[in-house]
Amino acid sequence: MRYKVLLLVFTVVCASCAQRADINYRIVTGQPLQVMEHFGASDAWSMHVLGKWPEEKQKQIADWLFSTENDANGKPKGIGLSLWRFNLGAGSTEQGDASQIGSPWMRTECFLQPDGSYNWDKQEGQRNFLRLAKERGVNKFLAFLNSPPVYFTQNGLATNTGRDGTLNLKDEHYEDFARFLANVIKGVEKKDGIKFDYLSPFNEPDGHWNWIGPKQEGTPATKKEIARAVRLISKEFVKEGIHTGITICEASDYRCMFATHMTDHERGYEIQSFFCPDSVDTYLGDTPNVLPLISGHSYWTTTPLNMLRDYRLRLRNTLDTYGVDFWQSETCIMGNDEEIGGGHGFDRTMKTALYVARIIHHDIVYAGARSWQWWRAIGGDYKDGLIREYTDPDLQDGRVEDSKLMWILGNYSRFIRPGAVRMSVETTDKEGKAIRDGDTDQQGLMCSAYRNIDGQWAMVVINYADREQEFTVDVNDPKVKSWQGYRTSDVAGEDLLPVGKLKNKKVAVIPARSVTTFVSGN
Image (cartoon, rainbow, N blue to C red):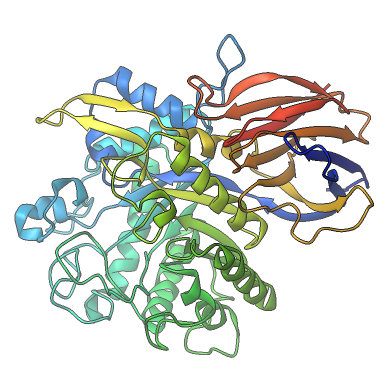
């Protein structure tokens, strides 16, 4: 793609203190940054139930999550996720209470049967949502595992109960595990017409808690164990002609990616270990199907505010050193997110939504994330779902409600489409003096800008402050005559609500505690 050098100038002035100098955001299109690949969420622990609800309710959920259509008034029907994560189960559902996973919601079925055959009718509810996503234009699908099938694990369970910090996979079943993954990739495509573009075979293998306890499917793994398994998966994929990209390694904490954090050397320094050729035992950079990127989770690195930026700068520096790309592949609200009261209690308001918007901004702007993925699409009374479910006792029906969190993700996912290029933003005051990190006032305005592959511009503006601010747009692009704003706020109905067209050089008021995406038009 060739880039013309254009200057897009956005002037911001605090409405309540007009005597202050204007702030100018200059988007330099001759300085393209990362390509944005997709925004996504997972079906974990919900869609195996909700995917069997009445069809009209499934369609409503799917429209909210995947639709890129507008209603008659030009309001988006959904947030247009462009990646859907499928939780490939290990078989804890079939074990029932013997799985030692207390909640049936957190158990999963397995396509593989005890006799070695496959039942492609398993995981029906989740497979229904694969189809619903595809029907609404999603064309990127990722399968991720928390545990190998229970038939292969050392303790016969999908949780690491009673074990140490090594991979819960019997030594003689490494090749069987690789063959299982290849069979699932081929089997789901044949059964449902869904091709998994990506496979993530390990999820938080570096967690210092090592997944000990009867809570959920999961297993730790050392870097050597990961490398051994991935090489065998790659070999099997090559043999079977499977082109699915293998992503590693869904780190539980960014600090495990560039250093060690509350663990030992067998789990830390993952970027260096997997992508530096000197790391002979664990190097995967030249392994077929392994993508030149590393994925990690945003958990535990969001507070205090100065570290929200600094952790991501350290991560980006290490990524650049080894020439590795980055996906933020999972996050939700945890106990350390004290600014919004921690994770307990579902929150439909802008309180959680703005907090997450600030994380998205930092992951993209400072860590250089090419993909940003939320944890659960649907959850219960916790801040881990974009949508809240209320299920009838028999699990056959229920109701759902949306949230400002879901729509705030849509301020990014709906308008920043796959292949969009993030552009450099320079900030100056009215004298033309540069303002360091001027595009990121963590308690005020934060902005980032993108150009989609069709040439359309999109800029996301977060106003974290408790006061409204004014925003003037001046664009040196002859094709752009106006900007359409889409606002999400605590005002009823402002969920990506179109708020009128803004002509160049005209002042727009950005309400307090809101997020607005401006999309260029003729």
